[in-house]
Length: 94
Image 1 (cartoon, rainbow, N blue to C red):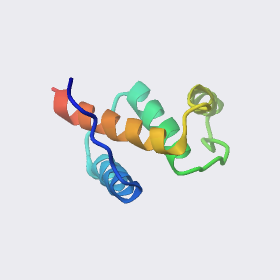
Image 2 (image 1 turned 180 degrees about the vertical axis):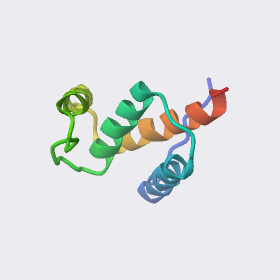
Image 3 (image 1 turned 135 degrees about the horizontal axis):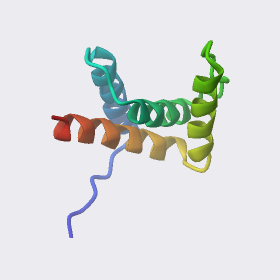
Image 4 (image 1 turned 90 degrees about the horizontal axis):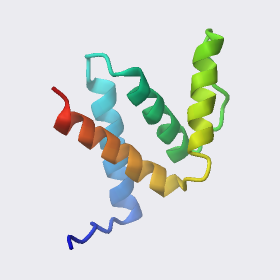
């Protein structure tokens, strides 16, 4: 069985910031469901509990639902999942 890479907090934070930067620097549009997952894990990873602030109520509802779905995820786990989402997106996108 392959071993999971055990990361220090510093390594996890660096990889997380790198993943965030990759997303922010990418100029093509992302699928909406992918963006919602990124949003929820980013908010959880950064302990940002501000309410969604879109001018469109439906967007706020989707964001609130996405946040609710990650409510039991730890901050470090949210960072790991965010990193995996980003890595997999860039690995498998067409």
